[in-house]
Amino acid sequence: MSEAVIKKVLTDHFASSPLAIGNAAGLIRLAFHDCHVEGCDASVLLDGPDAEKTAELIDTAKAALEAVCPGVVSCADIIAYAARDSVVAANGSSFNVVGGRKDGRISIASHAQFQQPTPDMSGTGKTDPSIPTSFAAQLEALCPKTTFNDTVIYTLDQVTPPVFDSGYYKSLQQHQGVFTSDQSLYDDKRTQPLVNQLSNDPVFQKKFGGAMRAMGRVGVKTNANGEIRKNCRQVN
Image 1 (cartoon, rainbow, N blue to C red):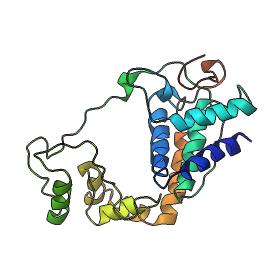
Image 2 (cartoon, rainbow, N blue to C red):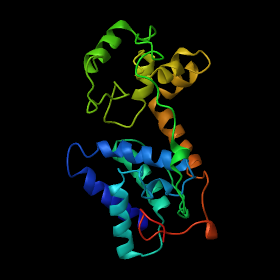
Image 3 (cartoon, rainbow, N blue to C red):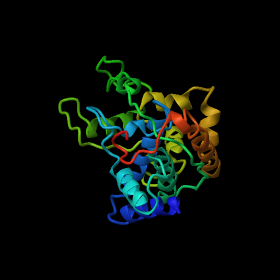
Image 4 (cartoon, rainbow, N blue to C red):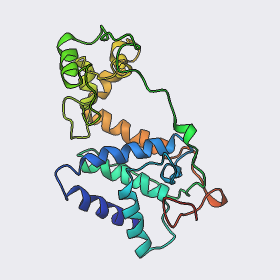
């Protein structure tokens, strides 16, 4: 029943506006960042100066669950189920999610910090010579050096942006990786076979589901190591 409640919250949201499906990617990203900081324990949701502010849908799902089965489903499990349902909503393949996680009691911002890359080639002001000329011109037209606009959005998948599929890998095969770290996956002969393999959509969907199941077991809190929060933004 809990999974059905979460799915309904997301389905209603995605149907509310043509642009709402864009939040599917945010929910998948939320699961990734949660699991890779303190483990899959919803610590990413705890309020603080730099708390995750894009998880209102998790709050809505939590409220709906508390209305029908209070104190049963953790915020950590809601994140996991929501990520899976977001993949499906974006036309990706479903995968099994095992529940039973407890919510963590701490959130350490420094564990999630990293050095942002410079927007040009190592800060030299020059365009990365490995980027095809036409693609570089396209990026420069969108983000000119003389002006700064933080509202500009450029999708990393130039093949099928709104669909959860293997289009990202096809973009790399066409030398249209937006970040050098992405394009290097194809340009490096050691990892190029993996990009070619994952450009096949059925293969990608199967492997992604397996990766999400494995990630969902990282740093899981159980029993006295965690709790089931009443409010996802604060400990009990």
